[in-house]
Image 1 (cartoon, rainbow, N blue to C red):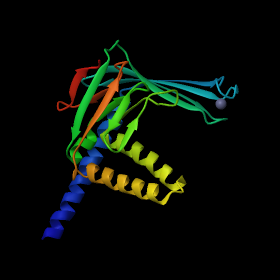
Image 2 (tube, protein in one colour):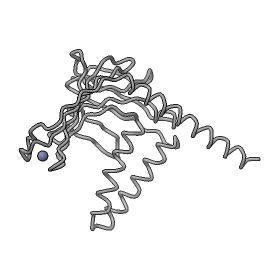
Image 3 (cartoon, rainbow, N blue to C red):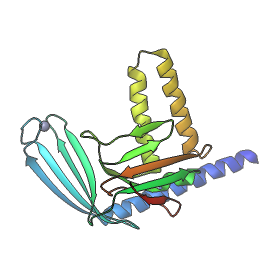
Image 4 (cartoon, protein in one colour):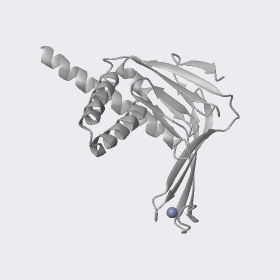
Length: 203
Ligand SMILES: [Zn+2]
């Protein structure tokens, strides 16, 4: 009986995930995409750069533009987001407390600092990217960074530390551990879209 309950919960979870995926696809369908191919790449100077601009309407945030540059020759890639209207410097705090929170939408610009205490800090800078994602997507990115560093690290202790961090992230993603994350953005182009997210002015 317990086993059946577990199975049911699992299937239910999968269905919810599918519905979320569908709504994301539907939302994307509402976006307008502009594409320019054959532009000059700022890195390798070849005419193999593709520029993309997407107009996305995010509920409770407004219209935003997502830009990206990709070069097929040298693999240079850059992406960023910018709100259509001028925004104030902002700080968002959000407590991740259940697996439902994985669906909370996150907008992160290249100027944002994302702090996940005792796990990772995503810093702004020339290599930083901007994107629209959700809490799950944010954790997946952090996991990827830790994972790739883990395999290249020769230090046994560092590898073990990375492994424990990955386990901790998984526990948070399953709703078994809580964590308070913050996003600070002097450009104002970032947001955590939830009524439980605390928005304050960035000093
Ligand atoms: Zn290039």
